[in-house]
Length: 482
Image 1 (cartoon, helix red, strand yellow):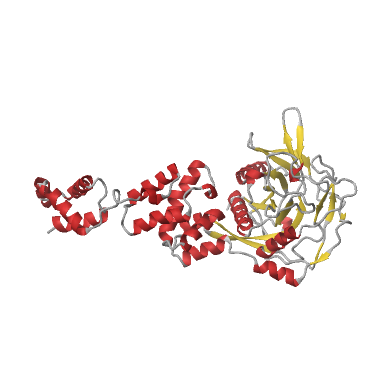
Image 2 (cartoon, helix red, strand yellow):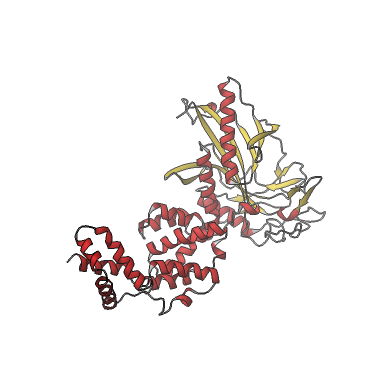
């Protein structure tokens, strides 16, 4: 451990994308490239409009609280957070402040970082409405109200993280939680995830659980990518270390991450409390959260990434590495699950998904949802490979040809290209090859055993690559060594 210990807390904002409408209005909750196309008078706070609570958004928020081992409130409240900003049409944000979802009990998140299980305490989780977005141009800034009123979950952690690596691993874990639970696509490219980072450095020799030792906290606002979070944390730790090493004091302030310069930049000084003038939202009466409602939510929670990973290792015998790749993206894991349901061998299917398919997706930057070779098509290749109708080399050729021409793999599996696996046919071909290479046979038996590959190559040449290579080697070995 170095001279200083970083104390890092995160405020993760994730849009709830899996509801049809916004959190307080009937406007569509869907991503659109067309500005101001999903807007309602309620989102704009026109006079005479009243908010309507989206029950599905409340359900999603409560589901997240259960997964994060938080307590659930008896009553649901909303409050107004009053401040002015150009992208806030109401002049306030409808949120939860004094009564957030974890009702007096910390939640806890377990996540994996470098094959170790880490734990982070959840300070609070709350449901609120998102603000509009600003598009900045050379001479103007335009407002797009599509995002205004989209349900937003804000997760606030305790400062239990100690490095950029841990912070990113935590965020990746939370993204998978939201995706697997069906709460959100959690797609940062659509602006559905944003993060504020709080960092302080403390003397590493002191008790890290004593808040008096934590040092001065600096906040970094609105980072839009996990890579940005990693780089911002690493830069800020370096910046604060240099300040402390000079014997100077870190100033409590809010900064922003600038990707172009790779630095954090001062925005404003930060005091311990900002008076946002919270008060109860008068147009949304508090409502009781019934036990029946909570139980129905709890029963609907699906298998999450860590549970699937454990299953893949313990039930299917996959390696930790392969299981980790499979569960990283829910859609990839769902694809693998379909393969298993079709009766494919788990290890064979995992090998194709983690090696061939993931590499193809990364190369062409596409989602597995847009991948032509659906599980039933992959099964056409694997089943013929298992029956030894085709070789592993042919299987790969068919795989890529099917993708290139977007035709079913069975189109390319014919008698003409079928693998030769009949022992009598192969023996006849091998005898023919050996009878034409007596000199090489004598050299092999004299000790030049590296000629074995020569004989294999001659058989494959004779059969135009169709001979079963494993059987060819077995027959050749028996004939040459006797």
